[in-house]
Image (cartoon, rainbow, N blue to C red):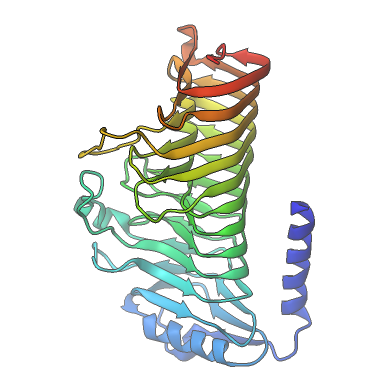
Length: 392
């Protein structure tokens, strides 16, 4: 069913932009954009967008080759027809942290959007990372996300490169039926909070054929997300592919139906991870499949951490109220850089249940060891080859 949806989705966009009547190409240079890497082109980009958005039929907003500095900008709908935002040039964010701004580039309330073109988004993160306080305290102003999609539907993001984001590279919030493919996200391993792709309160999101090398989670699926499919993604360096963190905030929603398959994790802190805070906020995290995944020199290849707390203060007076259930790990192989290659540290109040492991075959880097599994408050079953030996 998922494959049929993708085929139909691709055909729909092909038809929309090849035979639709009245398709116009709007070159941002014709609206005053200057490709000198210094002039703020926000107004020129917005004028081109607004003309595209308000006309009937399809439009292409075209950013030709060159280097364009762009201040924080929001491209808002709803629009009267499908829009392709074609980035063939390189966009640069302003230097510095410029706080009190959630995102650098945003798309909001748009249906039938394509963002593509092979261009680069340069967040100029090194000018802002020294001002990031969010790794040490909850009382902080986050730096801007490089590109964020809010309430975008039936859309595609492809062939885009993001480098040195100040915060998250690409965020998806409140979206439905979005394909992300052939994106290349890059930041140093020690860059703070530079998640690759963060998905929240969204459904039917597909991420494929992408490369993510960054300083935080390569992909993070958080509150209120369902039917997420991740495939053929290369991750590393970074913190791995994560569900969570969950349970930190009062009004979080369930997460269910996440598939991660045919991915490679190389030199990451974690492999596939589920993480939740020790808090009284109750949700369910269920129906996850991790399949056909290769790990190379990964510190924690398979990990569930329900005592997650990356910085103080930590609330250890109550167990996590996130119920993790119906999770399958199938055909996972490669090397671990630590002796504990499989770790399930689940909630003592809501133990993990129906955890199934089939054909997990890991070896320790350098051959030191035997590998170990660690389990707390977990109910599960194992089948096929298991190395390390399972602890349930």
